Structure formats: C-alpha cells, structure tokens
Image (cartoon, rainbow, N blue to C red; front, side, top):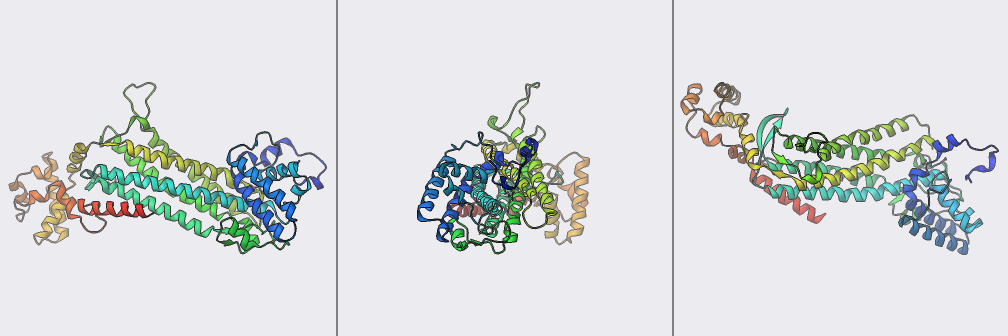
Amino acid sequence: MALWGGRFTADTSSMFKQVNDSLPFDQAMAAQDIQGSIAWAGALHQAGVLTEQEHQQLHNALNDMLSKAQAGELNFAASQEEDIHSFVEATLIEQLGDVGRKLHTGRSRNDQVATDFRLWVKTHVLSLQQDLIQLRRTLLSTASRYQHAILPGYTHLQRAQPIVFGHWCLAYVEMFKRDSSRLDDLLIRMDQCPLGCGALAGTTYAVDREKLARELGFASPTLNSLDAVSDRDFVLELLFTASTSMMHLSRMAEDLIFYNSGEAGFIQLGDSVTSGSSLMPQKKNPDALELMRGKCGRVFGALQALLVTMKGLPLAYNKDMQEDKEGAIDTVNQWHSCLCIASEVLQSIQLNEKRCRQAAMKGYANATELADYLVGKGIPFRTAHAISGQIVMAAIAEDKPIEALPLNTLKAICADIDEDVFTVLEVEYGINKRNNLGGTAFTTVTEALYREMERMDSE
Ligand code: ARG
C-alpha cells in the first residue's frame, strides 16, 4: 500500500506507477536508508517521541534488516512499494504494526533521500579512491618495468621530441592524482547531513541534528532546510569528477591504441584484454581500450542530463530529482570498471623498446637539439631555428636523418657546425639535457618515479 493513500479514492494508473516507482534502482541505497532510519529512531527517542521499548523494537528490526540488506537478502522483486523509503517502512510496519508506523514522525522522504544519497556517494567515493590508487600503482610499476625505454613524444600526432617511457606513465599519474584530489574536495564539501530538514521547512520535533549528523558519519548538519532537500551539487560534482577521469582514461586508451597499431608497433597488448574478429583470423583488437574510450559517452551524458534536469527546478524538492540516481549509479559502475580494466591493460603490455627507440630517432625529432647546439655557438635562437630548418630540408631531400648527413653538407649550410654536433644529435642527448624539474631526462624521471612511489606508500 502506498504511504500516501489517505486523500486518494481512485487507483494509480499502472503506466504512471511504472514511471513513478524508483525501487528498481534506488534499492541500491537500501543499507543507507536503513542506517538513516536507525539514527532517526534514536533521535525520535531522545526527543521523547518514542518510548524506550518502541525504540528498542525499531532498533532491533532495522538492524536485522540491515544485515539482510548487506547479505543481499531483501526481496525487492516481490515488492509493489514505490521506492526504497516506502519499502523499508512497509517492511517495518508489517513486522511491528503501529510501532513501525511511528518511524516517519517529523521526517520526509525529501530529507531522507537527500541523506541516503549522500551516504551512498560517500561510500562509493571511498572505493573509487582505492581504484584510483591501484591504477596509479600500476602506472608506477609499468614505468619501473621499462626504466630504460625511450618513446617518440608527439604534438599534433607528429613526432616532436623523444621522451622517456616512464615520463608518459607519470603524466597519467598526475591526472589520476588530480582526480583523487577532486574526490577529496567533494567529500569535504558534501560532508553535511540533511536529516531533520523535513519536507522543506525543517522539523517540529526536538531532534538533535548535530548528534544525528555525527552518528551518520557527517562532519555537521546542513544549515538551510530549503537548500538541503533541493541540493544535488554533490551528485553533479561526482559526475563531473567521473567525467574528467573518464576523459583521462580515454586519452590514455587513445595513446595505447595508437602505440599498439601495426603502424606504430610500440606495444603489444595481452590476450587477456583484446578480442578477435569473427571474420579476419589475424586480428587482435584493442576492445578493452576502445570501450574505455567509448564509455565516456554515457558518463558525460549523465552529467549533462542531471545539469539539465536541475536547471529549471523551483525550490524545493520536485520529483524530477528522482532522475538523479540511474545516471549516477551507472556512472560509478562504469568508472569503477574502467579504472580496473586500465590497470589490467597496463599490466598486460609488452613494450618493443627497439622499435620505440628507432621511431624516436626518426621524424627529425632532434632538430630542436640542433638549434640549441647553434645557440651554444653564439647564434640567436630565431636564426638557429631557421638554420636547423634548412638542414632538415636538406636531410629530407636525401631521405636521411640529420645525423646521416656528412659534416661538409652541414658546414655548407652553417660554418659554425663542427664534429661535436653528432653527439648532440644522438637521441639520449636531447633527453638527458631536459633535466630541469618536470622534464624527461632519465635522472629526472627516475627521481619523479621514486617520489611518487614514496607518496603512494604514505597514502
Ligand atoms: N523516490 C524519491 C526520489 O528518489 C524519493 C523522494 C520522494 N519524495 C516525494 N516528495 N515524493 O527522489
């Protein structure tokens, strides 16, 4: 039976019921709803609404239900209840009769759902933090597996300057660190408990909201009842953080798909994260990575959908807000899976160090070094840039790398060039010169790697 049958005479349309019911998805918050109710029963007891005995009965029944929820033993499929809140209340009433009917005193599903959803987000943020930590660990161990490897660095997907493979890994470590810190920020900002705000205007009962907040693990209660039941910023922030992190995963996927291509051939993905073609027997497709990239669509969509849902809503609660859950639940699941699969992909890769090094030497990626060499000879950089460009043209005309041109040819373009230029043109030279903080020199990258490993140990 619905919670609100009193002022109705006709039945609910079955189509409306189907659209209106949220139990099929908000059952994901069963444990949080029961925890909230346990705290609320305590607050009502303290406020003198429930006797000691009534409180005990509710407390015991709710704790039993919590164990069942955690064991996955609540039978939602058989229920006709509208949402998780009415499901929990109806179950109590069935068990305890009138005592169950007292639990909703002074409370609304509006402050209840706001509390449940915050608790749900908090729990998932903590486990997503662990996923991000795991992925960072994997990136660090991947970097340590190939400490001597060189990779061509690209801009505009044109070979630009050679980098150390670990530098690429550490670039993604930085991105996932920022994602973690965004989750930390979110946790701080959302750490307020809406319970006790009622439908919109507050509660008439003398419940201790500070104590309620503490019991449910929040830092403090929310400060304005109207805002508390209308606010879904914490969901939006979660969706934005997930979107940003999925964008990072997608860029990593894109890099790896390219590195794995026949054309680049820098890495080989493991069988465990690739799949074959039903037609072409030779194929080994990077599906795990393509899905990491592809899942961005639905995650970005969930963020956009909730922004649009919220933007025109007058204060306070409106049923539109029930649309906040499915996108968030799906987003958390997809983000979690993608973080895990990204770790698996990285663990599976084999780097073809020889091919990477050869590729890094091609494409005139040492032209900047040549210009810097000329600067060392006293030539202004802009002029040096032009000379180096002319030399690249001469090399292209002969279909050779710069270092394969004889000294005479180089000297004919610029008399200041000497034999020592050939050391400068070696691939390691340019890399090791970039030893300033944040650069790609082997020593700098190794230091950065150890710094990150230490940071992880202290996290
Ligand atoms: N199922 C609802 C939701 O998810 C719970 C709140 C219902 N409140 C109401 N006044 N109808 O938003």
